[in-house]
Image 1 (cartoon, rainbow, N blue to C red):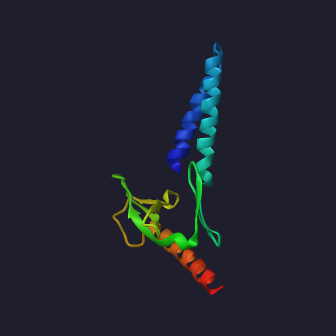
Image 2: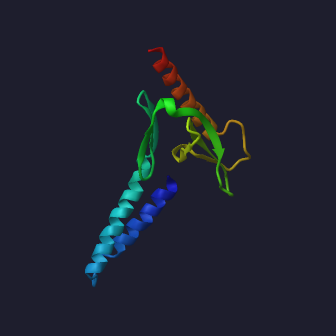
Image 3: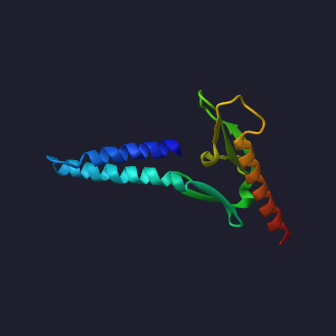
Length: 141
């Protein structure tokens, strides 16, 4: 999320730098394109989310939104990330068709040694509990 916003600010600044004295038509087109792309890339990560409801698990990512039916969710696990600076972990939806959906919106970083009560573990447990509660509730109806 921070990386997306940072890249958005850079593109926004580059786009705005194209406007000024002596800019030709190509410069204005490029400036407008970079400015719009930068504004979108700066704001979009703020709306990235994972929501659980009776209709399923809605995963709103950087570029697209997908909804997974509660019946298609087999488990919620935690995966080790690939970061050499910090202990990175992120929750993963394991679906009944053996595919996985990485929930980068819920990833967490820790600069301390790996610990059992990692923020990503707590987020995965809360997500798992919410899904299980809704699955049990839908079976009871």
